[in-house]
Image 1 (cartoon, helix red, strand yellow):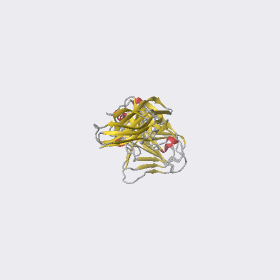
Image 2 (cartoon, one colour; image 1 turned 90 degrees about the vertical axis):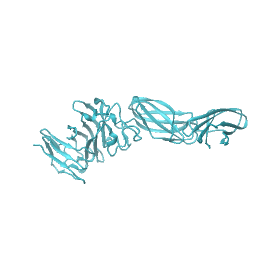
Image 3 (cartoon, rainbow, N blue to C red; image 1 turned 30 degrees about the vertical axis):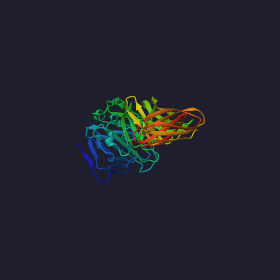
Image 4 (cartoon, rainbow, N blue to C red; image 1 turned 135 degrees about the horizontal axis):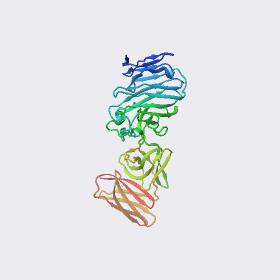
Amino acid sequence: MKYSISLFCFLTLSLQVFSQGRIVMNDDGYLVIKNSAFVVIDNNNANALSETGTGGRIISENETNVVRWNISDAMGLYTLPFYDDVNGSEIPVSMNITTAGSAGASNHVDFSTYGGPNYDNFFYMPSDVLNMASAVAGTVNNSSKVVDRFWMLDANHTTKPDVTLSLSYSDIEWNAPGNIITEGNLAAQRWNSDLNDWDPLGLPPTGICNTATNVVSGISFTGSEFYKSWTLVDNTTPLPIELLSNETECSNNHLVFKWSTATETNNDYFTIEKSLDGVNFVTAGTVDGAGNSTSIKNYSFTDFNSYAGSSYYRLTQTDYNGAHKTFPVVSAKDCNSYAVEVNAYNNQNGSIVIVLDAAAVDNYSAVLYDAQGNRVKAQDFESVKGNNNFKLDVSNCQLGVYFLQINHGGEQVSKKIFIN
């Protein structure tokens, strides 16, 4: 005979097994948890939840439908016989504690798991997850490389235990329409809630996939790497490249954009873009990536044609398969110095007048950019010693804000010009 226990609750509800009590699940007995209920196993022995006969089935299928196991500082192999009722699959989770966490009667691990309705994980992410492969939420979505399921393992210990996990999945969760996954490449990856990003730095995609049993095992990590939300990803396309830093600095009056990566997978190249307003960007240059790397890589790009005054830079990383990720914008310092005083103004008669006091006969160039950073005019001038007045024809330019850049040798100066 088969038995089923269902917990339905609009408030928090717990089914507790006290002291030396145990839950024994026999011959396909069901424990169905719904409506944010949770079951508390108040016994830290690994055999406090066990199976006999053909075993048992726990249905969670929501982040908030939780089995809370008060493990304290115990060690051993803790197994949750989760079941995917939609696809009719047993999907057990096993956690082998190899180094104990801190002691405490209420120190526990909360277990839950759920699958999604289709390949696009972006629409059913756990509450702490912000994106599916992009530091800028929504700009990249690599759900096609991720199984249609998440696992939550939430430890509240002050010092969390070191563990080795095994996660099971249904076939339909990796080969559903929209997914592009090689099953044998599946590995576990966690969401780092401190970095607010998928984290291959502290823990790259890990584990060994057994395609016959639909289990990824050998997912080992220390207590300091014990974060809540996990999924399985095709390890040839992890979520995402890990950027340690990106910043700008000045060197010899030129702007240098610098960045470092902790890990790279299939990283083809980086694109550096710049902007005068932080909204409209143009390409400043590209730098080759390392391909695949698990060590820190330092990069830099010197912009010999940087804007004078305030400007902005951003970095985009592109994989061999064309997938790309854009990182947050950083502001840039004014690295330009100019020995000669330069003024410029619109004479309201179709010209910009450039006024400068030159120390000798010399060559200058003027370049006019629109507000989007597009080059619209350029002209060379030769100065005389003393006062100079040059005119740049703008009679065909549309009304708006422009930026005039005066170049002299390795020096630059920029002026904002209104054409009206």
